Amino acid sequence: MTEKLKDERSVKFWRVAGLRNLELAQATHHRGSFPRRMHEGFEISVIEAGAEKLSLRGNTYLAPAGSVVVINPGEVHMRGPADKFGWTTGAFYPTAADGARCRFRSFGQKN
Image (cartoon, rainbow, N blue to C red; front, side):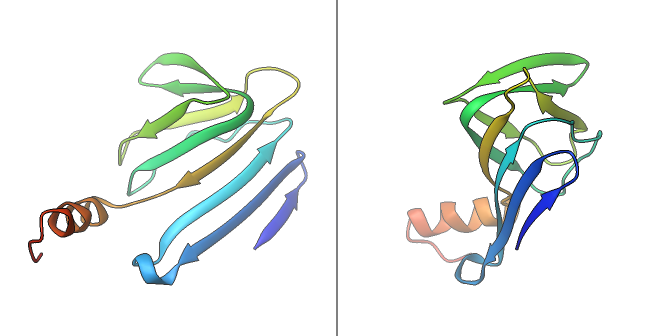
């Protein structure tokens, strides 16, 4: 599903059935910020172009192109553009169960 939103964001969101319905997103943001929010699972994203401003735990961070941003489950955060050019990101949202399953498979164990 790709959607053009009113604050000039283009977001594609999908799930991978063969990976326990792992959620993935590809997005370009030109203006506007995401409101404060949290996720049940991890949020792991790669800043592909531009830079984002991330507010987390009372601090503000700059994530330029090439950065990998990992947000733990349940952490309240807010994201927005670092400048007028916005940013492009690719993200996925694994759960702790996904991580455990990967660990067990890596060592040949059953979970």
